[in-house]
Image (cartoon, rainbow, N blue to C red; front, side, top):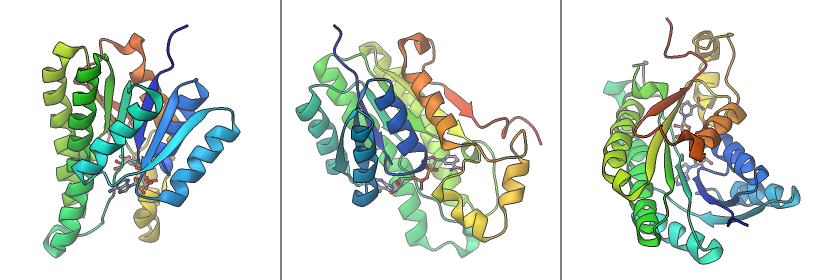
Length: 249
Ligand code: NAI
């Protein structure tokens, strides 16, 4: 019998990360749920275990490299390996660029950009050390390609995720490690509460084919597909999981 895969999922306490944790666990993978939010992260793990899956929670601030390094080490200490690293934790702030509070700007870059860099480096090193031909999946966004008002720092961070994905894929391919990104569009999770509060949700929906919000489970399905050996030709790519958001105007 082949050993079970181990998938580490940052931002696993909510939204896309939570649904991805459920997806991998339901397919028989061991899951490490990593998040800032301990209560919701533990709830994700409890649900997986109640459903007969295997998971642990590791409280992690992805903006801190040492935290991400110890997350990867804890995963290996617990389950013996790391096959999938999903660098997904993210935050958003809706602020016009010239009213930008620099603390908010740095917070978004620290989580969305540096958090992904930390995950690529810590997981990549461990996979190389253990000789595991793993997959690193990063959450980008349609906003890594398309400008939208009051989203300056977020655009900068997601553009960086796209180029870090290509750059790391190039260097890690010699170890048999793939690095890919998923780019969601408008997904119904707590991160878009700001759009709901500002009455902008109908506009968001109108950008999705079918005039609706994408469900986080749909993005989770895409992430799972990208992790499979059958996706071996997908490397350095950004796969849109946006129901057409970036395909029409
Ligand atoms: P969410 O708000 O439901 O989940 C984000 C999770 O990240 C939360 O559990 C939060 O506690 C965690 N987190 C935040 N800062 C963290 C930190 N420093 N360390 C560890 N965990 C931290 O939002 P959602 O939508 O599930 O977001 C997941 C990813 O998807 C993000 O990278 C987001 O930018 C991206 N995305 C979301 C879209 C949407 O419309 N919902 C569209 C495109 C991309």
